[in-house]
Length: 422
Ligand SMILES: *Cc1c(COP(=O)(O)O)cnc(C)c1O
Image (cartoon, rainbow, N blue to C red; front, side, top):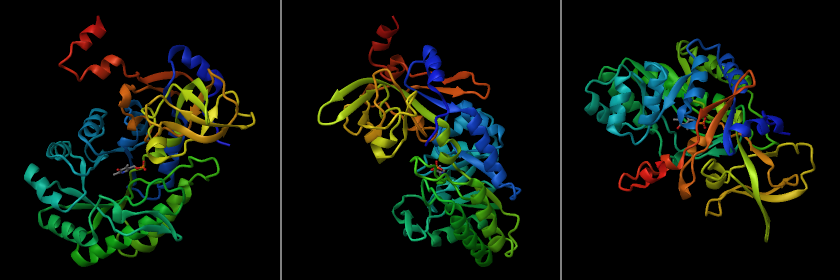
């Protein structure tokens, strides 16, 4: 059974101050997980996790991760500005972007972030912007084809817009070396949300072998190898969570078998996990406000896909707990739905749950990553607040809810804001 990190009593207390819906995060869980990640890779002295800021850009949460030595993986101007403002410095910032606007490359270079190029044509593009290439440069690899683990197709890199082909990669490193780049990195993100301990070790083998070959053929030795993101979490109750310790050991084995004998025993390992770092430690709390009996049984809640988009766009499963009814029989079949005028605005379809009454609080699990951050304003629905359940049990507002005034702030041509403030 999937546990919530908040109880009904806690939520009843919290909603006296902060009305639903809101995302709430578990500081204790975030810190314990961050520590386990660092321990799992402690065998590699240069190891660093660059948290994927796109997964959750709340500054308070980024500050917590920073205290555990994490860097920031950014892919847009706003994310770069945020990381820099929060005190991530120079090579604590990874810039893994694609279809990158010129001003973002310029700013990334200015603050000394590591630039991870998505394409070989970006060498010239970047040079045209900054003149001399930075001394440290990274390239993103895409091996094409499908990526399978034990015959299970995990993902389809050949269909993905990211990264360079093998040939382009060799050329890119050779060209950059000639242009005076001194430190090199390789990056690849081949599969998303892998719920298996084998993905990172297998990816590591692929990249390690390629890096040895690159050293032997063109004399470019990697300074770091970036396994990027893709380590998954068990959204469904019948899935087994990844064990980061086992993953770390699997990567170590590949490192010792491939890199160490090739004289590359000093290569630093980086990761850019988002989901694994934050996913389970956030949830969306919403209230049942309507029930409807037509051809199906519907429970209408006060959150909608604007607050959590994954079920609507990916058909993703998010577990739901009805607070206070954890031990009740799940003998009712419901569609749990939000208020958007879109029939995909369903947090759950044909889900067996205990009987839900109006006023019940529902916890939608695992929204810590790619949850709030993917929020949007469709239908004029507003972003919710974000709260932090701190280690001492107190609750801190870490982002206020968007207001209707915020929403209208872009319409300079109307006096609607004036009217709203009067
Ligand atoms: C999205 C992304 C990540 C994080 O992915 P998760 O699935 O959250 O681990 C890491 N690196 C890059 C470049 C990404 O685009």
